[in-house]
Length: 370
Ligand SMILES: [Zn+2]
Image (cartoon, rainbow, N blue to C red):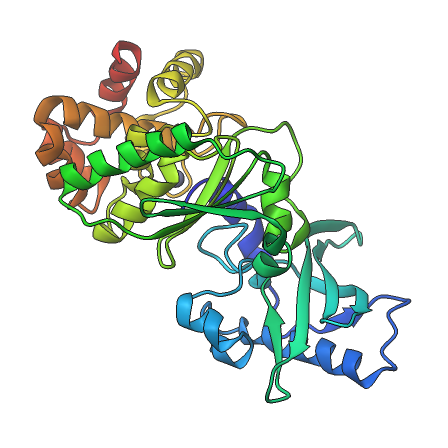
């Protein structure tokens, strides 16, 4: 998984309030028993996340979805990657309920308020609820409601789903497959079936996942992606059929759960946000030359040097550079060896013979010469 998540987690996770009531906005009509029951169902579901990131989904989602996916709800990890959306924010309000012939649709606002009553919005979500054959209420995935209108195509082990307006580009899909085959050979891995959702923009992807708005939408479009290595699902935008970075996460993340270089390895192979490692390293080098106060001996301190601007992730770039240096020195076997280490201290010591205090100069030199 990727991204803005690290930055977001700083802002978001601190303000969670367990057991918050689901408020109803003025205008929400709950006279119909079906509407009242659907809102209660949603409240019960959201409450389940108060104590766990992994509730019993079979109480809420269709059996088929639960059979195929560990996390059938595409909203849960859509914003922070590894922290549930439903645990963020300090207030939640149902804004809109629309009973239809097929389902009841509920739009909910997740937000924070501060001591001045200023509202900061996290997200506006859509949930689709209907009774199953046993009269039990269940959600319908937005991937079916919205994605049902999209196209699907499979190339080797990758099943693509994309907006109907897009003309499928087989040569881009073939390029991704070539990269995958090389990765499988190098790391001695079998093909993994991947469901790969893509669109031109992140806004389209977030709509597909059930959002009218999330705080990572908007701003200038650039390629972005996120992957779920438990269910082998990729959501990405801006690089069409060939977003290799997220596929690398799916193949390699689970092999090295404790490595601090999982994001670096994905950047080494697949670049980041539409640019390769060299592009990011050159930008990072210029930034470091202008910012002598940055001390890369603190690289492994929590949340140290994780943001420069909207285009380059400095922490990921440095870790990608470390992968590139070890690959140059020892090839794939070196990467495999390094990914078993669980701290940067161990990596610098065993791969480069460096102690803390020597990292900063070493990395600054490496960014200028790469
Ligand atoms: Zn990533």
